[in-house]
Length: 103
Image 1 (spheres, helix red, strand yellow):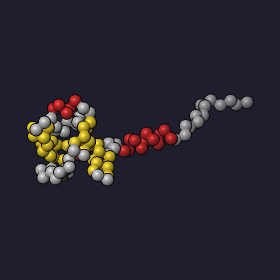
Image 2 (cartoon, one colour; image 1 turned 90 degrees about the vertical axis):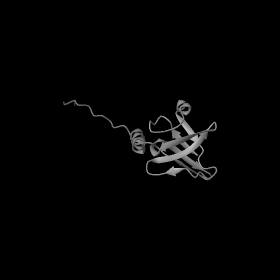
Image 3 (cartoon, rainbow, N blue to C red; image 1 turned 30 degrees about the vertical axis):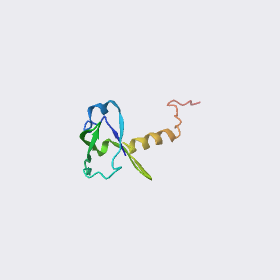
Image 4 (tube, one colour; image 1 turned 30 degrees about the horizontal axis):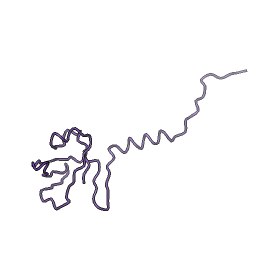
């Protein structure tokens, strides 16, 4: 199963599925001879209500891949997430006043 962010403009799916932000597609319950995966993404012919449609899912649109016994979840920008966590966990620095009292 592949969970895809349908808001990616490169995703090619039937128009009625674009209403949802994220859709899970079942790939390979039975062998799928026309499934192609390369450096750009996954291309697969699927049927929706009996009507065939050749879907394309670029890798950057895939949020999660799942199969029996394993799950791969993709985090879009890990550097940004780590940066946010680091900023939140660092102790606040005490500011020193610019003026000092001299006697």
